[in-house]
Image: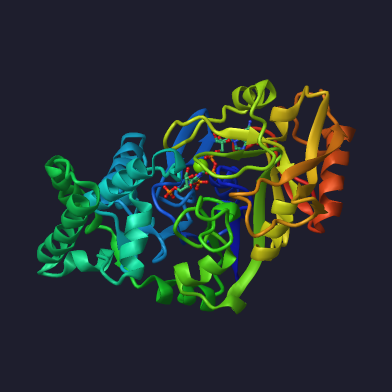
Length: 425
Ligand code: GDP
Ligand code: IMO
Ligand code: MG
């Protein structure tokens, strides 16, 4: 049995949460492998809506287990809030026993968030536009070999280890940024949340996942963010601090590359980005605003308005190559209903040349998109349940994209609800 991977091919918010939820019933284990509470994955069913930040999107199915893998960074306070909210809604994960947490996952401390905020403030206009969840500083401590891990919370000297790291952070805050704001309340909340987390099954997840595979069980790795936010291949430095690509599933769960099966890549029928950094197909105009309103493009985690634009084929092809995508999911096609014309970027004009790939530097030299016009469709898609109901012009749009990227679109999402999903082939 192989591990299938589902991940975003743009700049995040492609609809990963919704599609993982749709697919969950077919898997024994759903595992998050990177990122942290910078993610906001939205699920809708039975008239209810949930936004998950750290918890995998498979928790609503009786027979599906869920794992927060070693590659994830966990903010105990956010995780407790998520758990409390779910409990209030009738989903007590502790009682259900359907959530496991990797001992090797790193902890986000309140001071990591202060460092994130101070760094962004110092950068001013050129800031990354981070979610301020402490992601960058936590991964820095991980690779700097200073980090605290979930497994450490059971050690007798956990508090001393915590204090040691906090002392380092406060001295950095003082010397680099000249201020340390009071975090005593958050510190108290941190330790309360740690209490709760210690009651969950804390596991050696690499053994667990490999045992699942040996037993012939099905595993789906759930990505966060998107390929263009990958630390190595994204629009650096306007990226997140983890590998968001398929390779990240290997290191973030402890599985060998040969265990990877299907790679399901998600993209919107248009494109969005939240935070700073280049976005070649951005519509910084009324049309972009219309798309934002129609698509409700506001961040699930921070509420910030998302920037909107057209599908960017050089970027999409790059993401498909990096991830080894075998199946595509197109989401939010319903949002484009009623547009007379839609556009797709097929090439860039870049430094006097027309190119069809993502160049090294898109941050200082902006690639100008070369756009192809596509006939829009007018039909409302939100109620369609059969592939025969897909408007011909949307079918032509999908066929054009498939031909360009060489990978089939297997699922079409036509609304936020679990039921608004069509299997195409
Ligand atoms: P994720 O981070 O990739 O899980 O995506 P988000 O949850 O941050 O953002 C996707 C948003 O689009 C959420 O509000 C979803 O409920 C919504 N959504 C997902 N698929 C569709 C779709 O096909 N059509 C519409 N209209 N909304 C969708
Ligand atoms: P999901 O999983 C969209 C963006 C931030 C910022 C950059 C770095 O919901 O798709 P960070 O807090 O990671 O240091 O921020 O990355 N970003 C996301 N954008 N969706 C996300 O997650 C994101 N996670 C981070 O806006 O530009
Ligand atoms: Mg999101």
